[in-house]
Image (cartoon, rainbow, N blue to C red; front, top):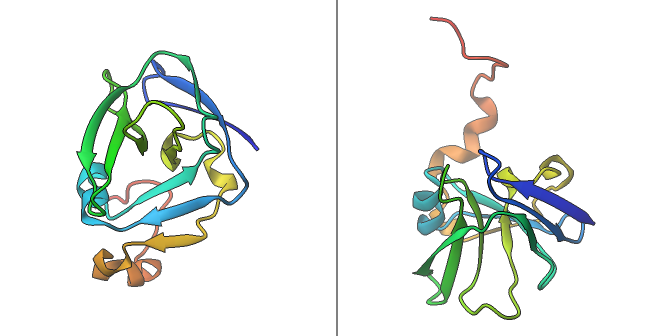
Length: 137
C-alpha cells in the first residue's frame, strides 16, 4: 500500500510503502514521554521505502529501553514527530508516527508492545464521555 504523510506545518512530506494493518502501539515510558501522550502508534514501512519528497527531517538518536540506538525523525520547524528508525543510514526500517500519515484511518494496530508500562486509566477510556467539540462549562 502506498502511503503519504507530512508534518503539521507542511515543510516535510514523504511517501512510503506499507503492508495493510502493519501498525502497532508502543506503551514504553520513552514513547510516552517523547509523544507527550499515553502511548505512540506507528505504521511499519517496508524497508528502504520511505522517500522524502519535500524537506529533510532532523534526527535525534536515543538509546531505547531495549538497548538499541534509534533515530527519531521530526520537523525542525513545527516539531511534529515523524518516525523512528535504526541509527545507520542504510537498510532503514521506519516506524512512521500514525498521526502524520494521511491514510491513518485505514490502519488498525495489530499488536501492543511494552504493555507493562500501559497507563492504568487506558482500560476504562471507552467509559469516559466523548464530545465532537470542546464541552461548554
